[in-house]
Amino acid sequence: MACPRKLTIASDHLENVLAGKAFLLMDGGMGTLVQQAGLHQVHQNPDLLNLTHPADIQAIQHRYVEAGSDCITTNTFGSNRLKLEGTGATVAEVYAAAASIARAAGAPLVAGDIGPTGQLLEPMGTLAFEDAYDIFAEQARAAEAAGCDLIVVETMTDLREIKAAVLAAVENTSLPVFATMSFGEDGRTFLGTTPAIAAATLSALGAQVVGLNCSLGPDEIAPLARQMTPFSRCPLMAQPNAGLPRMVDGATVFDVSPEAFAQAMLPIIEAGITVVGGCCGTTPDHIRALRQLVDGQPSPVAARPGNAAPSFPNPRYCPAFTVTSAQEMVSLPEGEARIAVIGERINPTGKKKLKAALQAGDFDYLVGEAVAQQRADADILDVNVGVPGLDEPAVLARAVETLQATVPLPLQIDSSDPAAVEAACRRYTGRPMVNSVNGKRANLEAVLPTVARYGCTVVGLTLDEDGIPSTAEGRLAIARRIVDAAASYGIPKEDVAIDCLVMAAATNQSEVREILRATALCKQELGVRTVLGVSNVSFGLPQRPMVNSVFLAAALGAGLDMPILNPLSPRYRDTVNTFRVLNGQDSGARAFLEVYAQASDPYDGPAGDGPANAAATTGAGASLSAATAAAPEA
Image 1 (cartoon, one colour):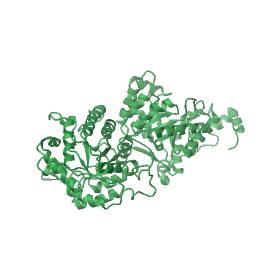
Image 2 (cartoon, rainbow, N blue to C red):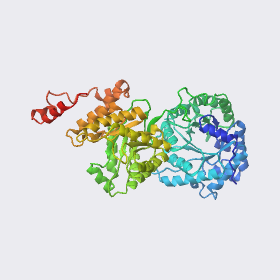
Image 3 (cartoon, helix red, strand yellow):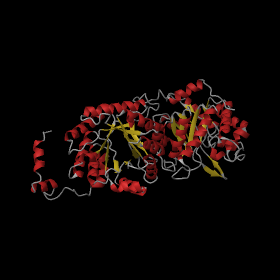
Image 4 (cartoon, one colour):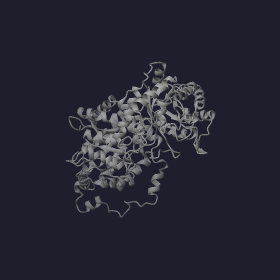
C-alpha cells in the first residue's frame, strides 16, 4: 500500500534545501546493515526484503532516523524490471512496500532510490537509450505513486545512463531529482567522466541536486567535490564510503570510524556541499557523528561567499558557456578571455566528398574528419549532415552517436531542422551546443524548448523575418530578442552565444565592419559569448586563407570567443595560438613556445617574394593599389 507524502515541516525543509538555504542529512549504507543482520543471503536481490522481511528493513531505517537522518532512501537500489525479472515481484509493489516501510520507520523525508540498470548502454553495450529511459520512467512513476518526496538517482558511472534516468524522472514525475555519480581514484568514472562534466551536464539537464557517492572515502571525495562546485547551478551532495574498501576473510571491510568520518566530511561541507550522508560501510553511528558536525555549521546562507550570485542555489557556481562530452569539457567563464575553436569540416556545404559519404552512409569518413580536427587542436566539432534527400533526424542522430564513440571532443549539433536537433540532442552524451536558433518567432518556439529540455547551450543567429540587418545595431536588437526569448524558457544568458553572421567581403565590404562592431556590441551590451563562421568572409576572393586569417585576428580583437573554422589550416592555427598569448589564455606562453620555439618564420624569405609584390610586378596589382589609395584612413 502506498504511503502518501506528508505536507509537513519536512516539506518546507526540502524547499529550503533545493534553494540552497539549508543542509540535508541523508542516511548511510543499507547493504552494510543488511549484512550485519544476516539477511544478505535471503535473496539475490536484497530489495525483495521489503516484501519478505519488512520489519527488519524498518528496524534498520529507524536506526538512521534515530541517528538524525533528515531523509531515508528506500531499499530499491536494484528494483528495476531487469533485476526483478523472474522474482514474481513488480516494480510498483516493491516501491510501494519500500516507501511505506521508510515512512513507518519515522523518516521525515523519503527518497525513492534508483540505481543503475546493471547493463551497459549502446554503443558500449547492448541496452538501447530508449529502453533504459522506459526502465527508469517505470521506477520513477512507481516512486511517486508510492508517496516518495524526492527521487535519488545514484551510483551511476555512465553519463549516458544517468542522462536517461534523470530525463525519465524529470519528465514522468513532479518530484525533485537528486543525481550522483561514482568516481575512481583517478577522478573519473570508468567511462571517463569527470566530476566537473557530471555537474555541468546534470544540473543543466534538470536535476535539482547533483553530486557523487560510493567508491571512495571522504578524504578522496573531498577534492572531487570541489571540482564540481563551480559548474553546478544547483546544490551539491556527497555520500562517501567509510573509507576505501579492503577484503578480510572474504568480506568487504571499511576502516574509517564514525568520528574520523565526520571529521573528514568537514572539508566537503566547507567546499559548499549541503546534502551529505554516507554510502558503503557507513552505519547509524557514522550518521550520528555527521549530524553533530552539520548542526555545528553556519547555515548555507550565512556561509555564502560575499560575491555569491543570489539567483543560484549553489552560490559557488561560476556562470560560464559550457559544453561537454562524456570525457571532455569546454568552458568559457564570464569575465575571462578564452577562445574555443569549433572545427567546421563536418559540414557538407561545398564539400563533395563529405556529401557523397553521407549519401552512401559512410560514417567512417566523418570519423576521419573528426580525428583530423582533434589532432589539429579543435576544441568543439560542428556536425552538419544537411544533404537533400536524406532522413536528417536519423542521420544526424547516428552521426552524433558514431562520433561520440570515437572522438572525445564536445559537439555542436548544426541543423535548421528542429526534428533533427531534437533527435541528436536526445542521443547525445553530455551537454551539446545547438547551432542554431534565430530571431524568427516560429524558429524560437520550435528550437528553444529542445534546448531547455536537454540542457544544451545554443547559438543565436542575428536574422529574423526581415532578413539580416545591415547595421550592427540591427543585429544587436535581434540578439537581445534571442537572449530574452531564451530566458523565458529558463535558459540563462551564459548558455547563449550570438553569431552576427559573416558576409562575403567581396560583395559586402561595409558589412564586414558592421559584423565586427556588432560582435563587440553583443559582448558589451548583452554579456554573451560570440560565434562567427570565419571562412565566409573570403568567398569570391583569391588567397582565401590570407583573407580569413586577417579577418579572424580582427574578429578576435572585437571580442570573438568561438570561431568556426578549418583547424587544419596553418594560418588559422598560427593566428589562434598567437592571440591566446596576447589575451592571457596561454599563461606564460608555454603552449606557444612548445610549438614555435624552433619553428622558422613562413614569411621570412627574400624581399619581393610575396603574392602582392608578384601582382604589382605583373601589373595585376593596379586595382589593389587603387583600392588602397581610396580607402579611408582608420
